[in-house]
Image 1 (cartoon, helix red, strand yellow):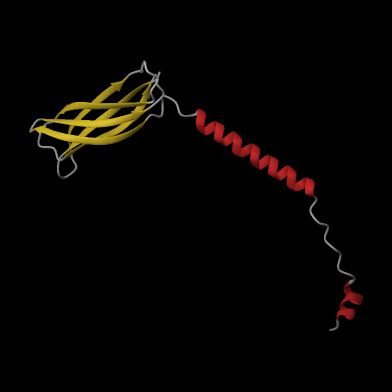
Image 2 (image 1 turned 120 degrees about the vertical axis):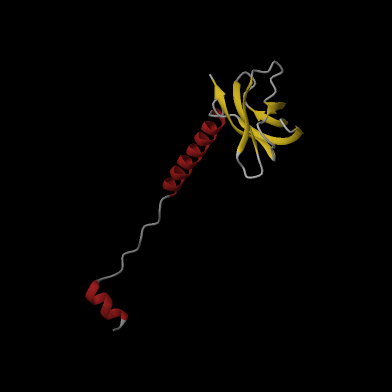
Length: 135
């Protein structure tokens, strides 16, 4: 079939209207507004109920004691509780301690601590298991 026969049978192809520039401006404004709102939300939800921690080391002092070194990032005026765990070579816990990290006077968000942990048998490693905010 020729092109003219198609036009006679089905009619002319209608030209598609281009998307107006106003539409794209509105879409861009909505996306930017949502991105800014999300960024603000992410920054303001970091509170005492969500402290972060980093294990920095451990030292096996004796057959019944280990020290755990760690850092906690939290709001300076918040209080956090961290659970320390010592484990034997097979990963079974041989020691546990909860440590409270109180507010700081110098407004620093990072608190470095080294804590002693008594163990029931030989430990292979010691870590911070978790941290949470205390109200």
